[in-house]
Amino acid sequence: MTTPNYRYYIRGHCAGPIDEKPAVIGRRFLQTLDSLSEIDPLFTGWKVFERWEIVEKEEQLLVSLADARNRIVEIVENCVAHNEYGPAPKEGYDVAAYAGARGARKVTFTVRTWNQIFMLEFGEHYLASDLSIVTYPRFRAALLAICRAWDAQWAAAQACRSEFVKTPMDFGPGVPAFKIETATQVPIDPTFPRSALFIPWIAYLSAKRAAGVALAPEILTERTPDDGLLMSATTERLDPTNPAHVRHARIIAETLIPLTDQGMP
Image: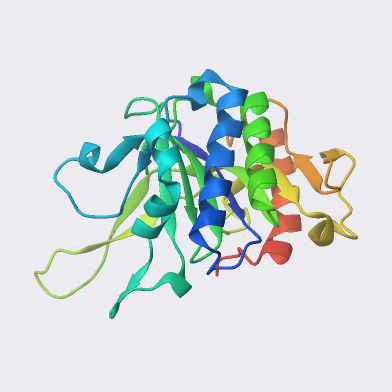
C-alpha cells in the first residue's frame, strides 16, 4: 500500500475587522514577514505579490520585500477584494508573499481579511510538503509569531492529505462519469472528525477562547505570554500513520471544532 502524502501548513483566524485600514494591514503583514525571517533561514528572501491579476508569468506580479516595504499601503490597496461593481474595500484584502524556490520547499504566507484567515503553507498548493522542513520547533515558532502579529483568536499547524479519489458513478446509459472526492484523511481512523482543521498538530487558542478548556494529561499544553493556550499532539513531526499521534490529534480536533466553527458535515 502506498503511504499517503500530506501537505503541512498553519492556518488561523485573525481578530482585526474585515475593513481594517490598508496601513494597519500592511504593518501587520510586514511584522509577520520580519518575525518569520528571524526564526529560520527558510523564511528569508521574501517576494511580495504587488497586486492580484491574471498574468502569463507569476514573476510579473512580484517585488522584493525591500521594495514592498516602501510602498506597502499601495500594495495592500492593489490587493483589494472585488465584487460585481468593482473594488470593494469593505469586503477586505488578500495579501501574499513567498520565500524559497517553487516546489516542495516553497513557503507562502497569505492573509485574507475578507474571511479573517491567515495561512503559512509549505510546498506548492495541493502537493505534498518536503518532510525535511516539517519540524516541531519551526512550526511552533512560526505559529506563535503569526498569532502575535494578527491577534489570533485561534490557529493550528495541521496536516492535510493531498490526494483525491475518483469514484465511478451512474450518470446514464453509455455515459462514463466519475466524481472526485477527497481521500480519507486518516486511513487508520476513518471516523476521525471532519473539519477545516484536517489533522491538527499544534494548536493555539486565545485566552478568551481557551477559558474553561481542559485537555487529557497526555496532551502537551502550555500558556503563551498573552495567556493563550498552546496544545501539541506531539513534539515530533506529526505522522498521520502513527496511532499515538492520531489519538492525540483527535483529542485536539474534538476540542477545537466547537470553539472555532471549523467543522464539516
